[in-house]
Length: 432
Image 1 (cartoon, rainbow, N blue to C red):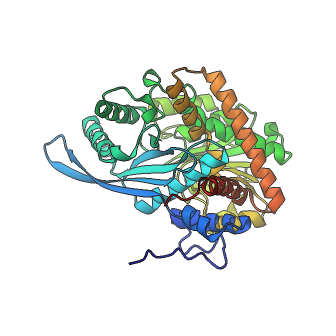
Image 2: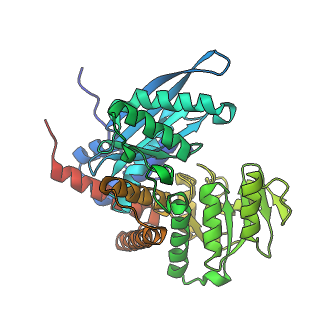
């Protein structure tokens, strides 16, 4: 039977998704519009629309009580045209294939936007890590690594931490892979501990990149950081570092939240106190520096800057009209749906999209991979200087694309990325 052809929409619209909260549909809607604006030919459209490879595996794990559980795992490699696949691995009970497909594609565009020579990939395991012991988590990680081992490697696909994974998880992946290779292979993962070849600045890179993009966005809008206020949704690694480094610009952080809700103080929060609270308690529960608010209320605060740094689909067509911030910098992946994009364009809200705003992590992951390959390591100042140069240049390229084609910064970022991947694919040709 002949393969079914991909039917390109006759009218591409970022708001045409049947379900605006489906991450794959949201990504595809933006890709379609970028492809239309670029005049991408049908053949290249067909290639870039779908993933190169999708891997689904069963992961049997012997639990501490001797019982056997089987978990579902995925690794999607969207494109390796520009280099090895690159993307995190998340452990979460709601992981599903469409989500991993979307995240892999976002990684392709993210790497291209900041001109990092990687393709896009993503992995996930459907599990609740909070209910697993360290031993169970290690056995799960090692078996998952073994199941996808034929498809990853320093020159093929390089995993990294993501939701509910961390440097320790990366260390187990590194060790499992290295044992099978019979030699240490530090470049198999990034985001690993420093003593195993991790990079200085990697842990803070995503949040630091968000602050750089906030600074550039405020300057572009003619807004003085020292007179601006900001709310940050999410106080995990990205949210907390973003808040701390944005505060260092002189911006007043008036609200921050975790999964249970947030703290609001119109006079500004002391980010040192917030950091101590999070270090000691890992949540904002019991923190009495302001008034308690919900995550929904935080999004609608009267602030200049909003940083959604928690999870996907928190800003939709249902609440976008209520958002008062004039600048939104997306620390999370996919926090804004296509329906909300339309409203922000009409209201002239400047959105620094996720594929640019949170690209600091993958940029420093690239630095880590380079350092592993050459066996020479940079200090944190050198890492941060290189990161700033790349991200600021990328921001300027996106803004130039937006002005040239009279599109939003999100569609401009997609256009810039799709054009780079299409150009490489066109130049390489099709092997047959």
